[in-house]
Structures are given as C-alpha cells and as structure tokens.
Amino acid sequence: MQLSPRADLFRLLGDEDRLRLLALCAEEELTVGELASLLGESQPQVTKKSQPLREVGLLSARRDGTRTLLKAQVGDDASDHATRDAVIDAALEEGRKLCNKDGSFARIAGIVAQREELSRRFFDEAAPTEVTAAPDAELLPWLPLLAPLLSRAALAIDIGTGEGTLLPLLSPIYERVIAVDRSPARLARCAAKIATWGLANVRLREGDVEDAALAQDIAHRGGADLVVMARVLHHAARPQDAIAAAIRLLRGGGHLVIADYFPHDDETMREQGDVWLGFEPAKLRGWLEASALVSISTRPLPGPHRPALQLAVGTKPIRDAIDA
Image (tube, rainbow, N blue to C red; front, top):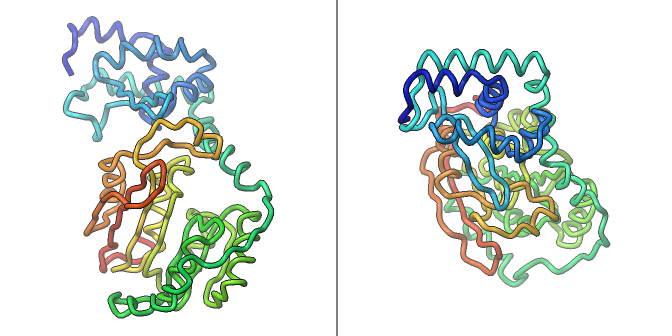
C-alpha cells in the first residue's frame, strides 16, 4: 500500500464513520446497500466515504452485476498491496468498539440472512405439479455400469434437489440417495416425480446443507460418498459457509461436486432468487481449497445452459473425519 505521509493516514482514520465502515468490511464482505442499512446512511454517502479507503488499499471493491461489494484488506488475509501496522490495528479496534456500541455489528447476521429472503419466497411459491418422464429413459437402466468405477457408492446427497432433476442419474448408481431442499412446495413436486419414476432408494428431507440434524444423521451413516450442489451456491447468502457445511457431510475419500454459473450480468436472475450472479472460477476453487479439499478440478460444463455453467470437483482427504 503506497501511503501518503503518516499524518495523512492519521487524518484518514480519524473519522468515526470511516472507522465503522472499515470494521464492518473486515467482519464481512458487504454490498454498498447493506452498508448503507447498517450505517443508517445513503448509498452515495457510503460510496463517498469508502473511496479514500479504497484509494489507499484498505478496502477492495468487487462487482456482482450492478452491485458493488466492499471488503477490508487488513489482517492475515491482506493482499500484497496492503500493509498491516499498529495504526491500522488501532483503527480497526476503535471501529469495532463504535460498531458494538451502535449495534451495527449485531445486525450484520440479519443483513446477510436477508440476501436469501427473495430466494425463499420464490421457491416456496406453489406451482402446478406436472410429472414428466425421466430424462433419457432408454439410457438410465445402463447407469449401474458406472458403479464399479467408484471406490464406494453407498450414499449420495443431492443438496437443493429442487424437483429432482438429478435423482434419476444418482439413484441407479448409489445404494441410497438423500435429496435435500428447504422448499416444501418443491419437495412435494419432487415426491410426485420420484414416485412416478420408481426411485425406491431416494429419501426426501426438508432443510438445507447447514442443518445440524442433517449432519448428525449423515455422521451416523459414516458420511456420504458424494455430495452434489447443482445451481445452489448462487442462492446462498455466504457460499463459502455452504461449501464448508457440505464438506462436513462427506466421509474421507468422498467427493463434493458443484455446478454453478460463471459470472454474468443478467440482473433478471435476481427475480428468481439469485443472490449472486455467478462466480469466478478462481474464487470457487479458493473456497474449496480453504476447506482442505484435494484433487480439485474446475472446468466448463458443456450444455445449453444460459448463463453458462462450470463444474468444480474436490475430494475430502481420507484422514478427515466427518465432523472435522
């Protein structure tokens, strides 16, 4: 970080609003709109007050469609352009005290949780149940041919199963499949489909990947061989937490498979409950690596999907227990 003379740094960090803004962004990556709610200010004011901090490298900005997210570049995860020193440490400590005093720290969790509200409402809307034939019905009976290629195929978990698109692919290969979704309406439609398709080894479960009861149940079963998260992360308030929770469901040697969008600019997707407009492959890979997965691969997923999809696969080290 190329700083002006120290007196200018003291002056920059002598403003209480900037101290609060810096402390909030050190706690969580937040959009300008979320910061405006936490600080009780307008978005233009937040942008104006954050600009000097961005110019000296204490804040970084990231675009997600038309939104801007701000993250503090201080501490152990600071970039090469940010230098932590006693002045910045003192500024962060004072900012945290101010945020604790005005209650803005305590409101962060609620602000982050609100990211998923539109998604919950969208998927809870009941739609007419229309049961269709399983995809590629002639090929499905041949899927067990793939089972010997897997080291173990006892349990697969489909997180965010929706209406069960992937279940006809997983059911013939795995002894047992647990399909998880937090929307009762979607699970009802999924139940009708799996009954028609005759997928006797599939069990439906209401909830999400971070449910403690789900983790306990899977732990009693010895962990999952496969956890799939297909087009799930862009609905999650904190995708990195969802990934960490999914990995806790795996046995050692089990695989996590994620399919999600590349970055895109289609703001209309937010009307379908999308919190994020895709992910940079490097960011997705970084979240997987941060959770200690190995044998990670990321690649485009061919197909007609728009926006385009990418596939990320990682393996949990065999030495790790399910509750690690």
